[in-house]
Length: 204
Image (cartoon, rainbow, N blue to C red):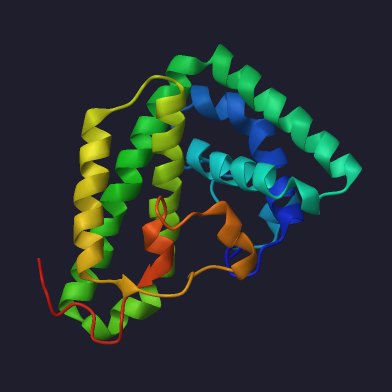
């Protein structure tokens, strides 16, 4: 998982592969697309979604100083490609974002159920939920940028956060320390929280 040990080169390769397939993905029926080649052929590959792409592009912009000149040039080209595709397929792009946001929040229900059933499991299964919630935040931010905020998605995210707080307590940053500058605690509080050993005593 790239969040455990951050490698901007991997984010760049992932973003490149995602953008190359983005237009076809937007007009297709799948929400979680698959990619081949590069890092995607090495196992544990991420799915192609708009949210997953936004996660990588924003991190790369924050950590551009870790890239060499050629990589920064490629990042500029990829960002321009992304903006062009977004403009050309704006309706499809927005629909995918909304669908993905709801899907990722719905997927977190399993975490809450498992934490309620067996609190001892909760700490060991938290990392995927932190990533899901972070990608949802990228989606909410992008929708605001497009003047396409969705009240239902915002409400659903707040409700999910309320449940998430019941199973977590403040902690050190849960991802690789090198990523911390990209995620201010005020906006990404769940990355500064984790289930304690006795989590889950307060059931829904």
